[in-house]
Length: 300
Image 1 (spheres, rainbow, N blue to C red):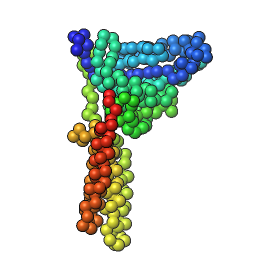
Image 2: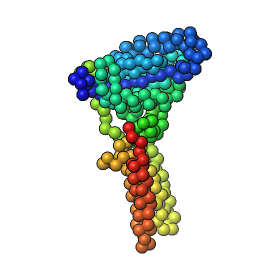
Image 3: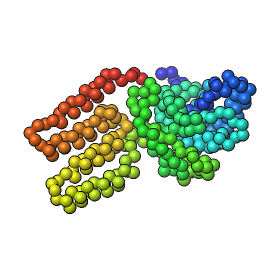
Image 4: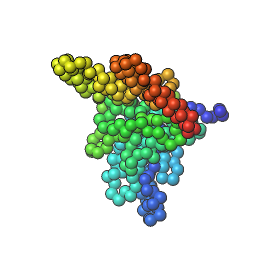
């Protein structure tokens, strides 16, 4: 690697105008005017939040921020201001990711930039999508909502990623950080949290209440024990959601979730033992499917 190329950990914002080509084909003057106005908003707010525009191409841009909170706050303010501008004919999609990038002069390159760009293409016009590392850093620091959109497979990526949408339905002008995060010095980088499980705490209390109710009904009716079967299914569901994004022991997300389901089936097999270990058949099917996915996984 050339000496002038180095790596750093940073927050990347990718933005692109929806329908820009269509607008230019119908009214070039209006398209150029709207693009200039939007670029001025981006430049001013990115600078306000200690960010830097690394690259512009056509109607899009790539910026990076030393603070994750400042990057998301900047995106919210940009979308809010653009939506309130009279005559603004463009709506922007924004994607934000916290990851490792290659710094080549003023440009940012690498998978971290690519993921931010993929999130931007998946966002609705006027929307903001963020990755799991960004969500982990900001969800407790910004008084704005986040909608979990599930595990998504960005184009040309080998693994699924957890995607969240920033909720912007209410008055975004009132959104303020709960904790002000000052930008970190340029020679330091924010920490990337280890990939964590999906947010299961919101379901854990409900699951415990349902299981408790089933056990109580089971004991009160006294007609044989059966509550452990639906309880096992509920616990397996929580276990599937709790699998980290990268899976366990490098197995990958899907095989790790399959192991949780096999464990549930094994429990049911043993609890209803009739002399046959039938769990080997669904376990074998899971193994074949996991092997097939690994062999046919798209490169890059």
